[in-house]
Length: 224
Image (tube, rainbow, N blue to C red; front, side, top):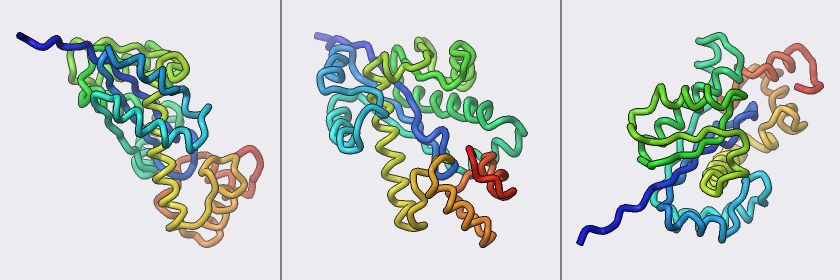
């Protein structure tokens, strides 16, 4: 007797899009259709609405439920090369980088249907970016804003991405000192970058293409 083949549902999301320090993480989670509701039962939700402890606990449970999962780490150097080479805004370049990384993950997960949290203001355009890079055929892509709030499988991906980035940031703090969250609005992050500017030494963990750097070099230290 041939075993029934269940539909595979996947979700893809990012963590670390806005920071001036650290990598951008893209994560994907795929589950069998019959196990989808288990994600809701364990309490997955948008990672921003969970504590660090809750995210770590849920990660273990998500990986036990998942059919497959995968990560893509986009380094500050990769982001900088793309921004400086294409001479476009950070937003436009990141949309393309994310779409390419998401396509790579979708190809590995091989789902029948995938939900992605659209980074582009134009959901359809973001879907088209992904499809341009996708090798997998016959996969349905649903690109929507706030998908991490609407679909449990995208919430699961957002949790994995956030936990992965948090772990990397913790390692970087051990090596470079406490630079805060890495976000431009964080006083500790700005202090760290200003120290680098004074010393003329820029660790590779900094996204040099961010406008934050230019503003701080000019002595402008508000709303960076």
